Length: 193
Image (tube, rainbow, N blue to C red; front, side, top):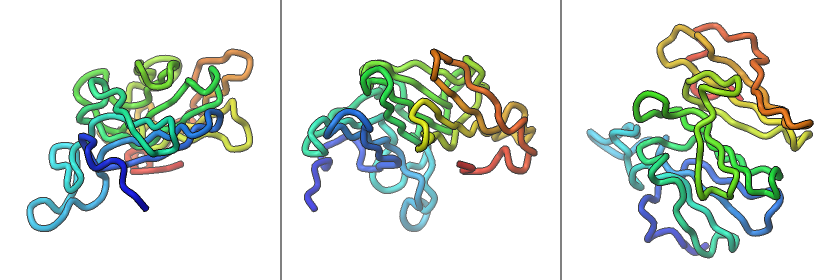
């Protein structure tokens, strides 16, 4: 093994995914979810990032991990990326990213890039997704047009929380709640998918 990320702004990698379409394209989300170390810095969180550094967005490699560039720093700084889902949509240029953290109103949740990570737009709070954080975002391995998201409610009310599905076949862009909301005890959970 050879490290190629020692000079990047953060070494805390929270999610890694390969493009299903573009050869040698790899994405790495930043942000620590594990124990931070010893003493006062034992539990990693956004305000106490632990070892490896704070969340600083997404890293992208187009050469199989030999070199990396940073993407989305202004959008994702301070929010740990839980999931990175590169797709075959738009010639492999569409990527979904999920974060459970927020930096205030109208932040956090699911984000989408249609240009390989150059720019991002938040889709939580629109297109059927509630304006909540997201702890799990996964592709359907049997259907490349289908994706699942778990929106969670940290307040404990369970309002809007649940498993949502996006099926882009036929040009659909609306996420559908397929769990009919979940009990508050599940809706505040860490990962469901």
